[in-house]
Image 1 (tube, one colour):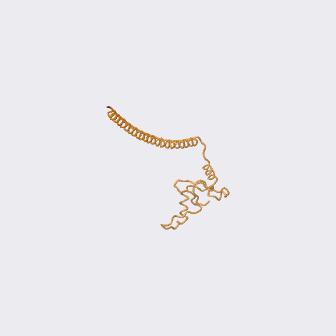
Image 2 (cartoon, rainbow, N blue to C red; image 1 turned 120 degrees about the horizontal axis):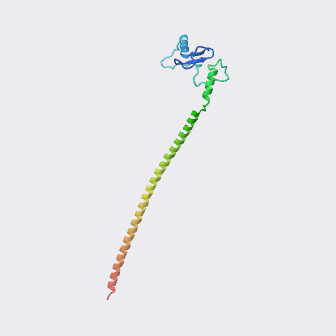
Length: 170
Protein backbone atom coordinates (compact mmCIF):
# COMPACT_ATOMS: atom_id res chain seq x y z
CA UNK A 1 0.00 0.00 0.00
CA UNK A 2 1.12 3.54 -0.58
CA UNK A 3 1.62 6.13 2.12
CA UNK A 4 -1.52 8.04 1.11
CA UNK A 5 -3.89 9.21 3.82
CA UNK A 6 -6.77 6.77 3.82
CA UNK A 7 -9.17 7.89 6.51
CA UNK A 8 -9.53 10.79 8.89
CA UNK A 9 -6.38 12.76 9.71
CA UNK A 10 -6.78 13.47 13.41
CA UNK A 11 -3.69 13.73 15.55
CA UNK A 12 -3.17 10.51 17.47
CA UNK A 13 -5.42 8.45 15.17
CA UNK A 14 -3.84 5.17 14.12
CA UNK A 15 -4.49 3.10 11.05
CA UNK A 16 -3.71 -0.55 10.48
CA UNK A 17 -2.17 -1.57 7.17
CA UNK A 18 -1.33 -5.22 6.58
CA UNK A 19 2.20 -4.53 5.30
CA UNK A 20 3.19 -2.00 7.97
CA UNK A 21 0.93 -2.65 10.98
CA UNK A 22 -0.42 0.23 13.07
CA UNK A 23 0.75 3.67 11.96
CA UNK A 24 -0.05 7.20 12.97
CA UNK A 25 -2.43 8.63 10.37
CA UNK A 26 -1.09 12.10 11.14
CA UNK A 27 2.46 10.93 10.20
CA UNK A 28 1.14 9.46 6.95
CA UNK A 29 -0.67 12.68 6.13
CA UNK A 30 2.42 14.75 6.94
CA UNK A 31 4.64 12.52 4.75
CA UNK A 32 2.06 12.67 1.95
CA UNK A 33 1.94 16.47 2.07
CA UNK A 34 5.75 16.72 1.86
CA UNK A 35 5.93 14.49 -1.23
CA UNK A 36 2.83 15.83 -2.98
CA UNK A 37 2.51 19.46 -4.07
CA UNK A 38 -0.63 21.14 -2.70
CA UNK A 39 -3.52 21.39 -5.16
CA UNK A 40 -4.09 24.75 -6.77
CA UNK A 41 -7.52 26.06 -5.91
CA UNK A 42 -9.14 29.42 -5.99
CA UNK A 43 -11.20 30.88 -3.18
CA UNK A 44 -14.36 30.25 -5.19
CA UNK A 45 -13.71 26.53 -5.87
CA UNK A 46 -14.21 23.79 -3.27
CA UNK A 47 -11.29 21.51 -2.43
CA UNK A 48 -11.12 18.53 -4.73
CA UNK A 49 -11.34 15.13 -3.00
CA UNK A 50 -9.54 12.22 -4.70
CA UNK A 51 -11.79 9.39 -5.84
CA UNK A 52 -9.79 6.70 -4.05
CA UNK A 53 -10.24 8.12 -0.53
CA UNK A 54 -12.84 6.00 1.26
CA UNK A 55 -15.41 7.37 3.63
CA UNK A 56 -16.79 5.78 6.77
CA UNK A 57 -19.89 4.72 4.85
CA UNK A 58 -17.97 2.85 2.13
CA UNK A 59 -18.58 -0.90 2.19
CA UNK A 60 -15.95 -3.04 0.50
CA UNK A 61 -16.91 -5.25 -2.40
CA UNK A 62 -16.40 -8.87 -1.30
CA UNK A 63 -15.33 -9.86 -4.83
CA UNK A 64 -12.35 -7.48 -4.71
CA UNK A 65 -8.91 -8.72 -3.81
CA UNK A 66 -8.36 -7.78 -0.14
CA UNK A 67 -4.70 -6.92 -0.82
CA UNK A 68 -5.63 -4.35 -3.48
CA UNK A 69 -8.51 -2.96 -1.46
CA UNK A 70 -8.21 -0.10 0.96
CA UNK A 71 -9.93 -2.35 3.50
CA UNK A 72 -8.30 -5.24 5.23
CA UNK A 73 -10.01 -8.31 6.75
CA UNK A 74 -10.18 -6.65 10.16
CA UNK A 75 -12.08 -3.73 8.64
CA UNK A 76 -14.45 -6.15 6.92
CA UNK A 77 -15.05 -7.85 10.26
CA UNK A 78 -15.65 -4.47 11.92
CA UNK A 79 -18.20 -3.46 9.29
CA UNK A 80 -19.90 -6.84 9.63
CA UNK A 81 -20.14 -6.37 13.41
CA UNK A 82 -21.63 -2.92 12.88
CA UNK A 83 -24.26 -4.36 10.52
CA UNK A 84 -25.38 -7.02 13.03
CA UNK A 85 -27.51 -5.65 15.84
CA UNK A 86 -26.27 -6.50 19.33
CA UNK A 87 -28.45 -8.80 21.40
CA UNK A 88 -27.24 -8.09 24.90
CA UNK A 89 -29.54 -7.44 27.87
CA UNK A 90 -29.01 -3.68 27.76
CA UNK A 91 -30.09 -3.50 24.12
CA UNK A 92 -33.20 -5.54 24.89
CA UNK A 93 -33.97 -3.28 27.85
CA UNK A 94 -33.67 -0.20 25.62
CA UNK A 95 -35.94 -1.82 23.05
CA UNK A 96 -38.47 -2.53 25.79
CA UNK A 97 -38.22 1.06 27.00
CA UNK A 98 -38.66 2.35 23.42
CA UNK A 99 -41.74 0.15 22.95
CA UNK A 100 -43.20 1.36 26.25
CA UNK A 101 -42.49 4.99 25.33
CA UNK A 102 -44.29 4.42 22.02
CA UNK A 103 -47.23 2.89 23.87
CA UNK A 104 -47.23 5.77 26.36
CA UNK A 105 -47.21 8.27 23.49
CA UNK A 106 -50.13 6.49 21.82
CA UNK A 107 -52.11 6.35 25.06
CA UNK A 108 -51.42 10.02 25.79
CA UNK A 109 -52.64 10.91 22.28
CA UNK A 110 -55.76 8.81 22.89
CA UNK A 111 -56.24 10.52 26.27
CA UNK A 112 -55.98 13.95 24.61
CA UNK A 113 -58.47 12.88 21.95
CA UNK A 114 -60.90 11.52 24.55
CA UNK A 115 -60.47 14.68 26.66
CA UNK A 116 -61.29 16.80 23.62
CA UNK A 117 -64.32 14.63 22.88
CA UNK A 118 -65.41 14.86 26.54
CA UNK A 119 -65.07 18.66 26.48
CA UNK A 120 -67.14 18.77 23.27
CA UNK A 121 -69.73 16.48 24.84
CA UNK A 122 -69.87 18.70 27.95
CA UNK A 123 -70.40 21.76 25.74
CA UNK A 124 -73.12 19.92 23.79
CA UNK A 125 -74.85 19.04 27.08
CA UNK A 126 -74.72 22.68 28.24
CA UNK A 127 -76.12 23.81 24.88
CA UNK A 128 -78.86 21.16 25.00
CA UNK A 129 -79.86 22.18 28.56
CA UNK A 130 -80.06 25.78 27.40
CA UNK A 131 -82.23 24.81 24.43
CA UNK A 132 -84.56 22.75 26.66
CA UNK A 133 -84.88 25.65 29.14
CA UNK A 134 -85.70 28.05 26.28
CA UNK A 135 -88.39 25.67 24.99
CA UNK A 136 -89.85 25.22 28.51
CA UNK A 137 -89.97 29.02 28.87
CA UNK A 138 -91.79 29.21 25.50
CA UNK A 139 -94.29 26.58 26.71
CA UNK A 140 -94.76 28.45 30.02
CA UNK A 141 -95.33 31.73 28.19
CA UNK A 142 -97.88 30.08 25.86
CA UNK A 143 -99.64 28.45 28.86
CA UNK A 144 -99.69 31.82 30.70
CA UNK A 145 -101.22 33.47 27.62
CA UNK A 146 -103.84 30.71 27.37
CA UNK A 147 -104.59 31.08 31.11
CA UNK A 148 -104.92 34.85 30.76
CA UNK A 149 -107.26 34.37 27.78
CA UNK A 150 -109.33 31.80 29.75
CA UNK A 151 -109.60 34.22 32.74
CA UNK A 152 -110.79 36.96 30.42
CA UNK A 153 -113.39 34.59 28.94
CA UNK A 154 -114.52 33.67 32.48
CA UNK A 155 -114.83 37.35 33.41
CA UNK A 156 -116.68 38.16 30.19
CA UNK A 157 -118.98 35.16 30.73
CA UNK A 158 -119.66 36.16 34.37
CA UNK A 159 -120.35 39.78 33.35
CA UNK A 160 -122.62 38.65 30.52
CA UNK A 161 -124.43 36.29 32.87
CA UNK A 162 -124.99 38.99 35.48
CA UNK A 163 -126.24 41.47 32.83
CA UNK A 164 -128.52 38.88 31.27
CA UNK A 165 -129.86 37.91 34.73
CA UNK A 166 -130.52 41.60 35.54
CA UNK A 167 -132.53 42.03 32.33
CA UNK A 168 -134.55 38.88 32.84
CA UNK A 169 -135.72 39.89 36.33
CA UNK A 170 -139.15 41.64 36.41
